[in-house]
Amino acid sequence: MRIVLVHPAGSNWMPGKKDAAATANRMAPLGLLSIAAWLEREGHEVFVHDCLGPNAAPGTGANVKKILALGPDLVGFSATTSGFLDGYDLAAGLKAADPGIQTVFGGVHISAMGGVLLEHYEKIDFLCRGEGEVTLAELAAGEDPLDEPV
Ligand code: B12
Image (cartoon, rainbow, N blue to C red; front, side, top):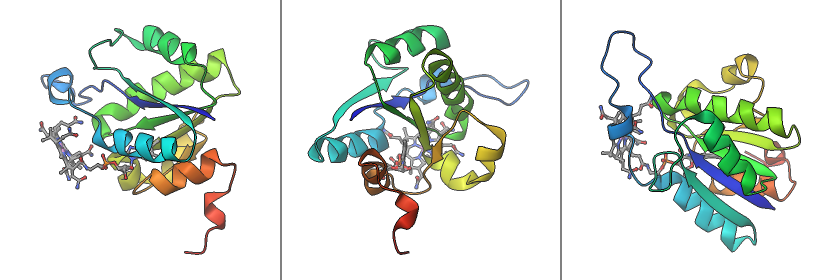
């Protein structure tokens, strides 16, 4: 399966406060890189798209185009609270262009908020709370991660 893992640029949602997200969020996305290594070992083709990386495109539309050009079957988004809405905008753009693309969100904001996000953000197909390596590998293999004994 072709999988793109996305690190959204992020923004400060707090009204009246300085937005330092483009500086604060500019870092190696360690969680995504760990998942990418795991998925590659499982035989998947994996790309990491960092919206603040050296070849970053400015804005949602340009990033959606870059992700689409990679021809993904599944796109995973890593979200801090700052990155969540940006990630969701990208997911919505991808779904508008190709409704067959599956979207999955993970990261600290998802671990904190949990399933309630699925009620409000319809372009998200799956959420992953906690560590994503095994769960995403199961999803990519067509298994239902919820079938696992807990
Ligand atoms: C290290 C760290 C940093 C480092 C980052 C280094 C780097 N290159 O990544 C530095 C010091 C730069 C940093 C900065 C900041 N941080 Co910080 N940081 C952490 C810390 C301690 C660990 C994060 C980490 O690297 N974990 C290890 C990696 C491997 O795990 P992970 O990223 O969580 O990914 C795993 C899972 O979440 C999941 N997953 C992640 N993404 C995805 C995607 C998919 C599709 C799936 C399925 C799963 C999945 O699977 C991954 C692998 O198992 C956490 C606290 C914590 N214990 O999590 C705070 C934390 C993430 N930081 C936080 C904050 C607030 C900040 C700052 C805003 C602080 C500031 N005021 O400047 C900045 C900006 C960060 C930002 N993104 O905007 C908050 C975020 C709160 C929130 N609600 O979003 C946290 C949770 C601390 C806290 N409790 O308040 N941080």
